Image 1 (cartoon, helix red, strand yellow):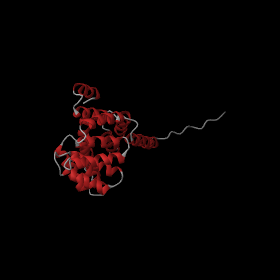
Image 2 (cartoon, rainbow, N blue to C red):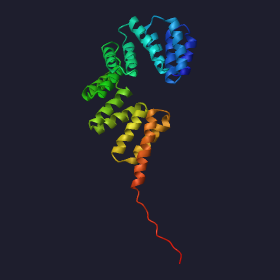
Image 3 (spheres, rainbow, N blue to C red):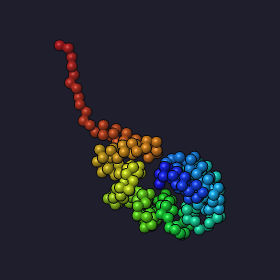
Image 4 (cartoon, rainbow, N blue to C red):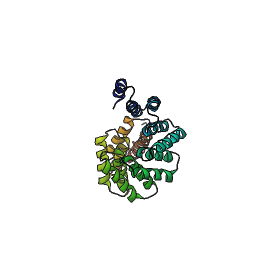
Length: 252
């Protein structure tokens, strides 16, 4: 739902907390966390004892780089509903953001045990498993995420990364391509396709994919990596060009 659609929803149902949930979520997707916070605060005034209210507030506080405020909201959400998987998942995100990896993994694991099943806790658990060298466990977690939602782009990209790391290149690039069909501007998938082409020595395609990363959003860390990769590869290609020697000239 777009911001415009969510604003229309609020106008049609100004006393429905779900309207402000939709509006806040639309603002977050649009990169407007301050506006999202205002929407969620209005939701909180209407539904102060709903777990979703506090999960939403905590998530936007994370966007605003206010982790302690976020933690209080996630803890409140769990207090209100200990079986809310979204609350446990977002608590895991808080722990991951402050370097508490074991606590993050435990929260993600709790989220995977609750209903309704969510794919993202499995993806985030898989990322931690990959970080500690448990690649088989990570692959299994990404697959469980895809069992829940076969269109989850995070799961597709990270399963692709795991396959790439163990040499299953065609499987990896197939997953990146599937991710790009779902999200043509997904920077991670675009960047990783560039890496695959560079490793295959198809350099023009590698550069093309990395340029697409930069053109999608030049401000991200992935775009910075793409710019660096383009420069390194271009320098390498320039060094491979045959050098021409000029004949000496002189006066007669």
